[in-house]
Length: 254
Image (tube, rainbow, N blue to C red; front, side, top):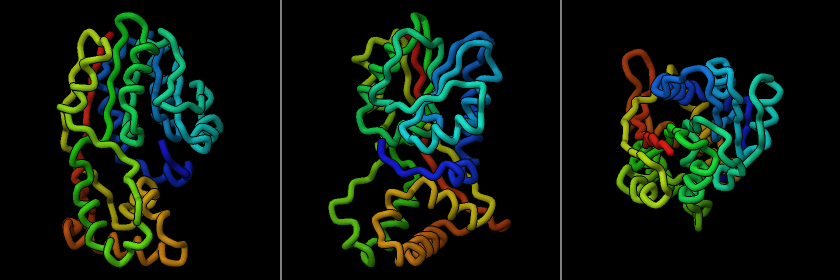
C-alpha cells in the first residue's frame, strides 16, 4: 500500500470515513468480549472506539509509520502496530477482523484474505468495507477533464487504488477457505459541508495524484480539479458538496 500520509490532516478530513465506520461497527453486533483486529486503522480513532466496546484485545495496524505514531500518541487503550495488510503476521488471534475505507489502497487482495483467514480464531468473522468498482467516478471524470494540461506529469502513472466489483471479489474469496462469505456493492453519498471541506478531503486522500504535479503548480492543479468537479456536480442549495461513492462490503466467517 502506497502513501505519504499526514496524520493530522487525515484526522481533520476523514469525517465521511468515520460515519461509515460507525455504521459498520453497528452491523458487527459485538457481544463485548471479542478480540478485534482493525486493518488500516489510520489515525486510530475508530480502533479506540472499538476498544471501548469490548473487554478483549484490540489491535490496530496500518502501513503508514506516520499514522501509527499519531495513533499511539492519541490513544492508549488499543495496541497499534505498523504492518502491511498484504503481510499480516497473526495466527488465530482474533474473533473479529474489521476494516473500513482502507483495503482499496492495496493491490494483492488474495494475500490480504489469506492473512485474515489465518488471523481469525476458528468460528471468527470479518467485516470489511472498501472502495468498490465505480467509486468516486465523478472525481475521476473531473480529473480526466483537466488532465490534458498536466499530461506530462502523469506519463506512466498508475492509480494506487484497486476497486473490485462484488463478482471479482467473490471469485477471490472462493479459494480461501471461509465457511461463509458474501460481497456486495453499496452506493453512498459522501457529503462535504463546504467546498473547503471537499478540498481538504481531496488533498488528503487523493495525494498520489496531486503529488505528481510540481509544487509550484499544485495550487492551480487542485483548483482546476475542484472547478471541474463543481461543474459536473454543483454544490447543493446549502453549499454542500456531494460525492457519489461505491463501497464494496464483505462479510466472512471461518
